[in-house]
Image (cartoon, rainbow, N blue to C red; front, side, top):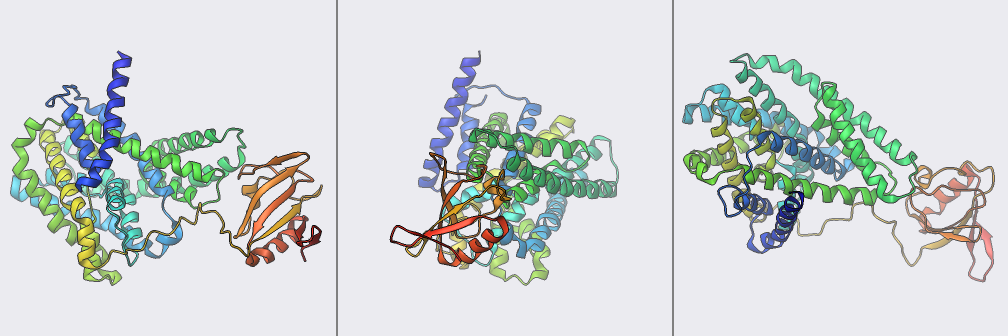
Length: 499
């Protein structure tokens, strides 16, 4: 019954959102509460919702992860991460490989798994979760110094592709009855190369398409970005590239470009990332049977502690040893490596492949994620203060969507677009207003228009602009290049041409 399904879905979403308030008061990460709500609603809980479709859970997880990574890319400020790009890539790749290897070797030695099975477990839990890391840090008011925050952001946003690749590759080798890990190297290089190229090219295509499609309704722009994001993932994947890497890079390109209705696009995808995050954790909570988890509880806690206290710190040190990071900074990066829903989604791959110990691996991964989020998530603000790397100053406004400053010294400037000007027929986003200039109104005939980035300029438009004194030379340059007439009020009711 569709209506009953809608009712259950609505109640789960509402309860999950209300739980975010409780998480702040209780000091428990919201992700754990989402997972707990799913478990309570599941077969072993009072909700009695029977759900064991791992294929559907994996499909939901893949789509959700694409949305989350795209949103993460949109929120990534390129000028901020550029100085630490090499460090982030080292963490996202070398760190993941070392972490997977250490966990795999320990699991093989301690639990009696084969080396390949241990490496599969290590690969599944090797990546940190961007959504988990930053939802916890924002809720606890953590604002790190020494470029640690963009470093952790870049790592957690870009290490999922290699974790997905390793998981799928190792699952394939185990499913085939064995094979060499070296066979994964050519495939890895091809996927990363095509993913990088696809992400950049589709990102540029997104920017051009959004700025030139000239839709009449603002809401259609955000829907358009959803279609373009799904196109980026699916086309890159079908061409043999890594779709997750592509959508993350495309998000970075789009988020750092001048874009029509950019604020709306960023807010929409931030909301979608939260929706997908909640949906993933609820879905995965429904998959879990608490009665079965007790059988591996001891091993799960042991593996989680090894990952958090041994494998993660060693992988961070190995990846960043050449970048002259202090021990305190390395310790903070290590402790901020929370696991989230991504490992649980990846744990469905061996289940669907029918591997012999797939259910054990799934249950272990669940424990590792829960312990990681609880142990690191609850204490991350305390650890940041203990290490002296927490900056108590508030975050600066995002310059990519921040309105030009208005001061008492700001001046009102009027510009007239004459017939034949190169600006005629161009949108404001194509014009590229100088820094410090805000176009507040267009007078067109008898109409007064409040413009946005998609507004098309016409001949004889009168533009009313608010500008700082420092921006006047840039406006003069615009006058010379675009053949517009600039005039400014003199205070006596007359107007004087800006020279």
